[in-house]
Image: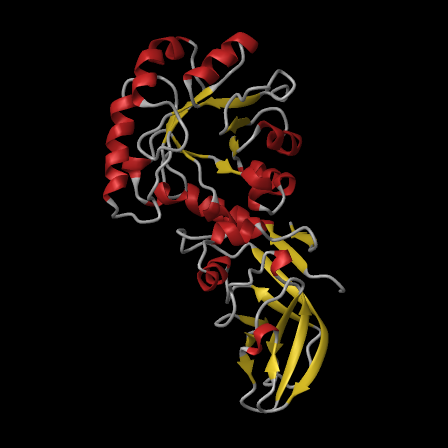
Length: 344
């Protein structure tokens, strides 16, 4: 194995979806935007469709093609960005459903494809995407007469269940949508975990499917194995890596592995992170560079051929915490240089 290997466990993915689905009495969809959070929209969507998912969500119409090819003609595929300027029938030929975010998008869609199915995204307080309350009030009767396929909004603080913003957005969403016939959705992973008040007609988990927080019970979906290029002996007092920050306090064996920040293993991660041979941790030492990471393997009985940096012991959220970011960013930045494999 000359390149780093990314393995995606579709069994674990399916198990995570089933576990989240069991937490509500409503339909559970799946967010597969950004190439299924970097893990491959085709294989991921196909595995979820086999489990029974019938509502998929992507960020842009261009992302929907791979999902449609994977799931067949029946499931609904919603496009968060809506009907953009320049979009036309070609973008939505695969029966993708734009989520209307503004009066301009609604007008544009009605002019270009007046009979095409659509959904509506409402701004309940996040101030990112969606119709403002005043715009929704002026368009509601016309939109409802056209039978939208879904009406959704998005929680800004669902990773903090006690944050007062969650209750405010819940009330706003109810005030805006009570009485509509279309299926409603407010909850992604975090909202789903907050209980029935937030579930409405369907939930749409994303990061929890892929093993990320706030779904603490998620099974790890991703493992990353790094090939060892070289192992060297380092004497007491010698330094390793850029800046010379790590200094050997004992005679050490240092393995250099083929991966780095160009592969989504952020330079900021630094200390406090391990790699593993089986259950045996081996600490990352020195700065992570573009293509290389150095690891203290002194305590191993023999030099390893490869080291695992993502596994059941150390998750994307552990790497994210060490880097001062979030698991989403680690997942979606795992780069194109990995060889990829799927456990089906």
